[in-house]
Image 1 (cartoon, rainbow, N blue to C red):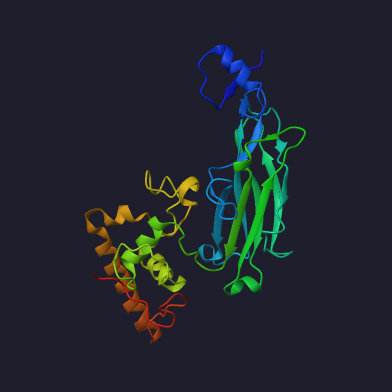
Image 2: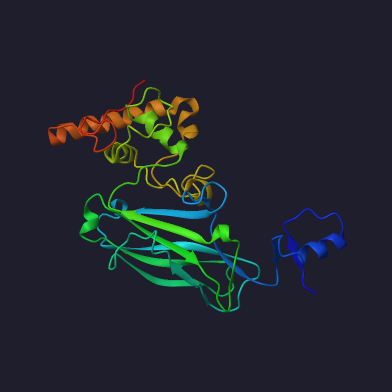
Length: 286
């Protein structure tokens, strides 16, 4: 007899059987296997509750010598593992994809035999247009196949963006970290993004060698996971640097790096965006 796990509160065994027969109540049949993306955030195109989106980002700044980079978007199974390598079916959302032909190549989409996770491997290409301020987006949607069902629709959409710049933070916990280290806002704990610039972020990353905050091995318990923090590499959440006012030490290190930059280049590093565009990047000391 098939076993069912139902997403409903069931008071009795008889109610369980009736509820699973009701297609209006989402049920999960553990004898079948479905595919999904990782944990998601609300999709801004669909509001806060009607759509989900797995978001990933890559910058060639982290691989300055590379002309291409193989990025593996994780996909996961719900249900039983499969006994053979199984291809993942997907489609490109052309309305939300901005990456032109020749800027990427999808190499494979596979769940290995006996595994509960696999990937859609995308070869990203550093095109001439990407050398500037350009950012590319690839939007994918998972589809059912003869061998794999799809999970709930909330977990079927993904967007991968890449550029040759450092991506600015979007989560308030990371925006606060930026504002604790770079002068510009009225308070050090502000969540305002209006004063941020990629050059300001570059100063932080260069001074503190921060490019692995998505790594659970390097930062156990503090890493930026994909579910909530979009695997953001370049800043910790503000509470980790606010603790014991350690941000004061970090901001002084950023200031020393900016002083050295000005000595080497004969001019200060300037903001290249935000309300301080064209003005010197300065570390926050208060």
